[in-house]
Image 1 (tube, helix red, strand yellow):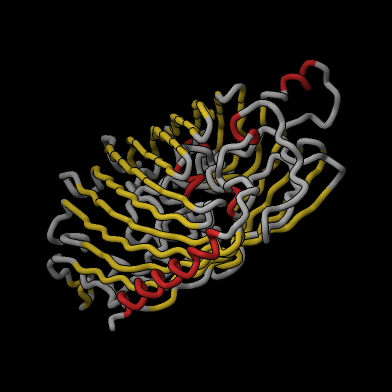
Image 2: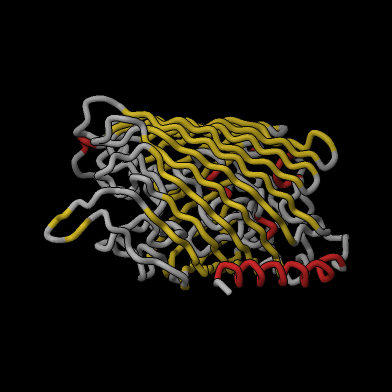
Length: 462
């Protein structure tokens, strides 16, 4: 029996075994990811005195849980969620590992460099990917004021530990400043080195070891995710939101070569409401713009790397250096203007999330700007009383122009996935993925390129 068939059979057996167990779950707990007052209403959510079955209590204010309860929470909730009782410190962690069984092929003609065909694909097959892990440090400094620090303990791009981000979140003033205190009922400030809030897709992606929020194994083709140093201001009232941010425009801060660097401006507007019982509607539009950067990484900032190891890479590639396997980076290193629109609808257990994106930019050596477009749609159905299991389908397409290729190129991908939350902290998911590249010239390694196969992923987050 082929390993692919074995994997599919094993997943099916687990799902059948899980069904009667999940059906016995008590209906008293709210479904994780369902809309609550922490996300869409002004009034404060009641204090969470008891965690869900096998979960852990939430002790931080304005907090997105790391486990299943964090699904479909986007920006950190404006409502405190828990009562402030003084300084607290809390640690969290998340780690993930995958079993990969993918095949890839291309039709590129040989290109010989130093005796090596650089268009020959690496031989890949069944195996286990490098395990990844995140460590989280949270500190409640004052009422409505907390700090978060995220470290990658192990990632595809870095085997060693390194800091992803760290920021200060302010939802209430720690001192009495009269009218400003009333203003903070609607305003949130976030400052530090942080994941930029461009688009909503980054809230639903796998972030190194933390893959609990994503129903799929792989992220989007054009993965708009990076960390930058700066500050954000949010205004939220009655389900409406506006956000403005200024950052350094690059993945790390520096004061050298100021003539070649400038700020990045980020904006987002939208609304998020329960329009009737069991029906939640959210829609946002985002913009990211920088006119001058030494190395903008809006579409290449995921130093953790792609979940699809080695796909469409040649025999000279390394796991770390070619860590964005299967993804598309437009290469807008020095100038970029990007727009993303995201609709989200949840009706009972059925969810739809969409991505409509257009980005223009260039590298310093280019005389004209290039354009890329991306479209994606996720349909997820979550079932059983606490939505312990789900099935999902995603279609994703991206196309545009790359440096050195006169015509448009691109890729499209289908992902079919299913998952089981064994507990709110433990997720097992399986995915079948198929992806094709289009428009690449015969001398390019992606000419006629495609890959497909099965992925299994286990995730623990708490």
